[in-house]
Image (cartoon, rainbow over all chains, first blue to last red; front, side, top):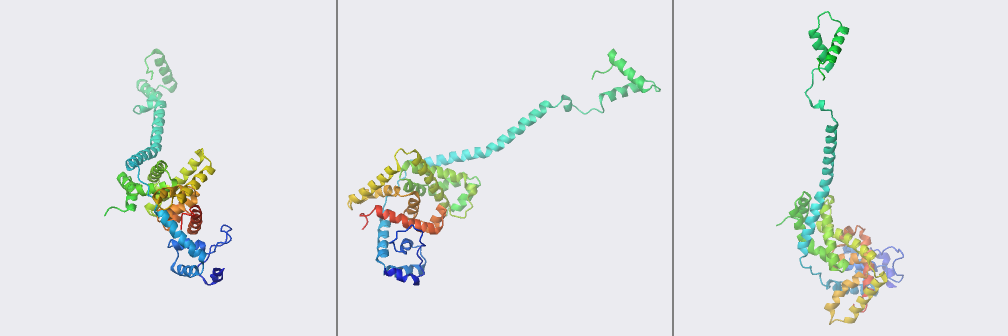
Amino acid sequence: MKHTEDHSDHSVRPYPGRGEQPALECPFAPRVSAYHDGELAVAACQDLERHMAQCPSCSEQLKHLRSLSQLIVQAPSAALPDGFFQRLHVGVGSARRQAIVRMAWPALAAAASLLIAFSVLLWQTPAAWGRPAEKGELWEIAVASLNAQAPADAGPEELLTQLIVKGLSGEGTHE
Amino acid sequence: MGATDLELARRARQGDDEAFHELVDRHGARLYGLAFSLLGNAADAEDVVQEALSGALQGLRGFEGRSSVKTWLSSIVVRQAAKCHRTRARHRVVSLDQLQEDAVRATSALQAEGVAARSNARLDILSVLQGLSPEHREVVVLREMEGRTYDEIAEILAVPRGTVESRLHRARQELRNRLKGYLP
């Protein structure tokens, strides 16, 4: 074939053989499609034009491509169904709301978890924790009170005895 | 002069619903045309556009503006249409052989009708397209019907430009064979 002799001088390179092209197809044939679409560089276009002038197969292919494109371009454009945009906007709005809910859900879940954890903590906290702080432990207060009433020379054993007696007789605090 | 697509996308990303609705108005009809050409069915096409736009709205954060909004939305529609095709194929009662038969019948109708009935025959081009493999149909629709450049098609389909070129060549060969006799 004549065109095969010209390949060495052309900058247009045929596709490397991958076993996908028919054996008899001109190696330049795939480039004709790109040429038809105006997707070849100027130099490559000129090379291919020179090749097509000598290759009936490629020039025929170009004619077919032009007819095919004309045929396809004449296919009717799809008419929009009635209410298309209305439904589209409603659908998009709905998707937006769902997206917001999806984004808000983790934050809501985290807030709810915190609230539950805090409630449980409060529930388990002793009531005394919420009262104003005492100046000391109860036994210390009681001992101080006894000290004030007891004679100055009373020892610790005597003070303890007085505390127990007061507690048993109901005179002391029950706190 | 209104806001550009990129400005609208940026505003929509910041929570401006109106901006996204504006994008829907701008691109809805074109996306429907693309989906219809890929699926050949009005109901599926509308579903696909609806899902694609809803998906786009949720994926706005991931849109970095490296491609145009038009290309970005088209790529979502193409992916969604491919998904719809797969789902349809799984649930369809008719076999793949039946699909092929339908395509052959549509091709024969095209060839039989002749020039006088060409306007009717044009309707069937979409049926013939449906007989192509998804990869071939996508490149033909994007190039011939959408007028996209090879670089844009490569971006939409996430394949190298060379793949677009060879895929388009083979797709046209297949179309030519299917439409043999109808073409001069």
